[in-house]
Length: 322
Image (cartoon, rainbow, N blue to C red; front, side, top):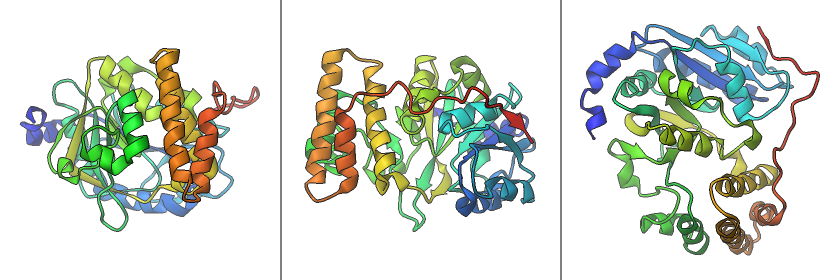
């Protein structure tokens, strides 16, 4: 793809631009040290960087671990658990406007030089977001790339399953591993690790806090595309993702399911949304027939009235820095 033609020179120029690494924590003590341990090598090749931890009122020692680590992270206390987007927004409000940002889950591990490769691609024309190749902890490929949600993707995934639907190039997940070998432009990708240019984030604005968890990255990257920017997949930048809790947690999976429908409903009429909802419900019911309580929770969430937001900011909360 043309946006990587001048990758080497773009990486060199990226050294001249600041990069802020943003990590959102909520009771993340078990995984945070592992990420922080990889940052020194992960940021290799970048001259001006800072690490910002936005803590959503963790009850464990996440903050103590962040402050004690040699990487020198700065902690922003959000004062409440407002979700992933609220944490991102709290951190970004404290970061200089001309800095690119690299947003990471606390269970991400960076490979050496990964951040510089992503930041370098952000220097290419109209690239607003750059996303890495993501691997599972065992070294297997994580299918992190996605197509824009549609009635077609919803019904194909519901009736054929994610892998078969993707094999036909009709499902939402890009699950053909061969498509992860080369760089390219994508609709959207997992929000577990993504770099955003200073120009794009200035134009697009805050992340939508009403999603709490899940689909906020779909919404944000759609707005990135609507602003005229492209989303670049950069396989030369590799990270490891240890996550996947939603697949085992009924509450989290219910939120994920409901937010899929909420996101779709904001951009389509009620008839199309009703058909999308039925598709999601059908898929969850079919998968729950094997006894999965997680998919039963998903089916229940698909038929409930959608909340406007899952949490409301406490009236007396204050955002503070440390």
